[in-house]
Image (spheres, rainbow, N blue to C red):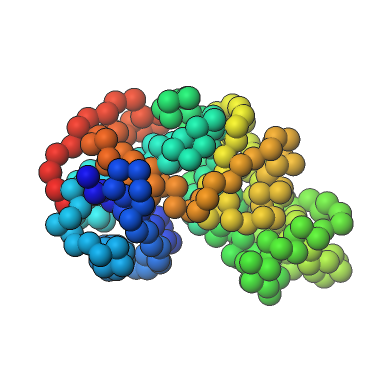
Length: 276
């Protein structure tokens, strides 16, 4: 059976096409303003590269904050469920999942079977997301990639108290005027994000193994700060930004979607039918 998992976030869309346990194709791109059109275009591109057509795909499962924009989806699952399925597939020992993307951060507690036991989400403030890093990199006049690298060269810990991107930029400018080095400021930025995300993780209860996914999992500076903040080792799976799409594809393979129960972990699953 050939299935597709599509993760549509506020900034990027990720797609994974699978046949049983094999990935046939994958791709990522910006969602832009016209998210539905961006998804369709990327989906067709991934299919073409894999030598497939839409008729070859039996089920399409969508997840992410803009999942409902995937008009051709067979079903939808919450982000936390997709994360759990995707992570457990790659790292069965995972019990705590930390997902930090462009616009949202979340901590998820999962069982050995990959069931979501509890979760907490930071969705009201950019200070715990990749957007915050982008804003701070602009203030420091370095790329996001460079910001992550130089943070590892920091020689001192500088507290950063800003709770939003606007005040964060002002604080970075103030630190620059104080002659604080860019590596130390970069470390302060990563520590600030790690502190907020670490607090989320403690809400659900930190338990090994801890796995970090999402776009920020590719940021070495942030991962290093997170390790120190939670005082635990963390694992980063291959292609951490594709975990949501992978989890959606896994759900499509077994033919189930998870009903979203607002405010608590998903509990019930229902079967889906039909082709995309």
